[in-house]
Length: 206
Image (cartoon, rainbow, N blue to C red):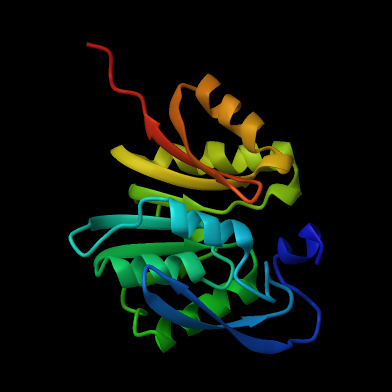
């Protein structure tokens, strides 16, 4: 599937649905997927690496989380299931992806805590304690950096962003670019060609 296709606002291909299954942190998931959205045939390998290697929130975690580029909702659903005291905002430009995320959240009993939006629908005053993203690297470096520049500043002062980036599609250059913008960036893991980055604000100078 081309990047332009899954990154389009309203896919125009006839809907073909299926279910996929995967497990994260000992919990099993079954989600509805469809053509015209990102990684409709399986849990994306980058998403799998992110959910396996990043620091998942737990039952004690509170606050507001963001799944940036949610697709059909695997990250949002995992976050909401693992951290029942949080609210998860799931955003995507793709209307079909948003519809599937709404459906999957409802199926898993998570609809009350997963709020699904188009990017421009997120209230301007919402600040995120955690941002999680397997961003759309195929849209190109300029668009990817614009996406990061738009959403990372909405991270809470003590918040953390977890990103997974394909090494061959700009993972290392994004790391460098974020560091140049004065973000504190740590490579937490490198597996199957993917980099897992932990991004935080640098401590204020004393």
